[in-house]
Image 1 (tube, rainbow, N blue to C red):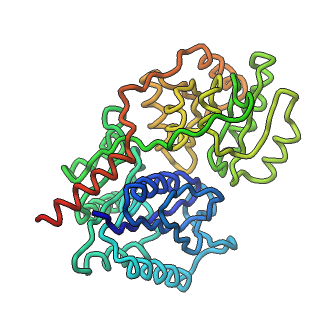
Image 2: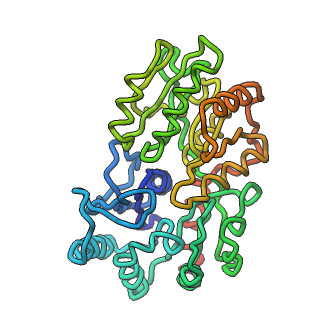
Image 3: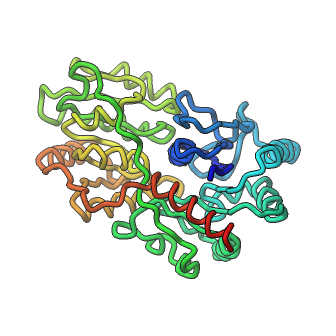
Length: 383
C-alpha cells in the first residue's frame, strides 16, 4: 500500500546528512510511496532525490566547525522571528501532506538547535488521528554530548519513537560503541545495513585510472588535507597523476592556492557526479572519513588513506576510520599529526595493500529501510 512519508533533514556543515536522507527518500519513492524531503540546509546543485519531492526551508548552517552559532542565507545569526517563520513553514508541509510516516534525521540524538521546529512537529504528529509512524534515521556513529542531561533528554524523547533506524552494520560498529546509553532503547533500535549510492557510470576516457584521487566531501573543513596532499605529492613516486576534487564549500582562498601550486601531473577540479567511478579506477583514494565518502570507497573496493576530521571535539569520523583500519580496509592518519612526510608514507603503504574485501558487510540499507517501513506500518494498521 503506498504511504505518504515526510522526511526532515538538516545539514549544517557537510552534506552527508542530506545525501543519506536523499538516498532513503529516493528508494522509498521508487517503491511507490509519496515522499517529501524537507531540507533545512543550503540547497545543493545535484540533490539526487529521485522521484521524491524536495521542499526547501529557509536555509540554515553553522558559522564554523564549533556548531555554536547558526546563521541564515545572508550569514546573519537567526532570531526568534526567523525561527517562527521556519517552524510555521514546516508545520504547513506536515498539514498539507498528512503523512503516514514521519522521519526525523538525527533528532533526538542531535540537532538540538532545531528544537524550535522539531518539537512542534512531533507534537503535531502525536496529536493527529490516526497518528503517523514516527521514526528516527541515524548514521552508524554518534557523538555523545558532554552534558549528561542532554543524553537523558535524548533517550526520553527516543522512547516516544516507534523505531530508531541505524544505517549501519553492528558487526562493524554497533550504536552502543559510540553512544553507550542507547542500550536502554532495546528493541527500538533496528539496524538497516549501510546505505550506499547506486553505482555511477564509468568516467570518460582514462580519468581516474591508477591515479591518487584526493577529496574532502563538501570541502568546508578540508583545506588542510588538500594542501598537505599537494605538498606530499613531491615526496611520492614520480609520474603518477593526482586528481584533487574540490567541494563547493571549500573556502575560495584555499581553492586559489591549490590552483596556483598545481604541477604538470596534477588535476584540480570541482567535485564530480562520477566520483564513485573515479574511485573504482584509482590507485589510492585520500579523503576524510565521512559516512558517504567511506561508503563510496568501500563500494568501489579501493585502497584508501583516511584522515578523519576531528575539529570541534568531533569523534565520529575517527571511530568509523578505526573500525575500517581494524579490518584492514583502510590506512588511517591522525589529523593532529598530519604533515607531508607522514601522508606520503601512508599513501605509499596503502598503495602496496590489496583492495579491501567487504563481502561480509551489510550494505543494503536503502532497500532494507523500505522493507522495514512497510512492515512496521502493516503491523501498526493490524494492531
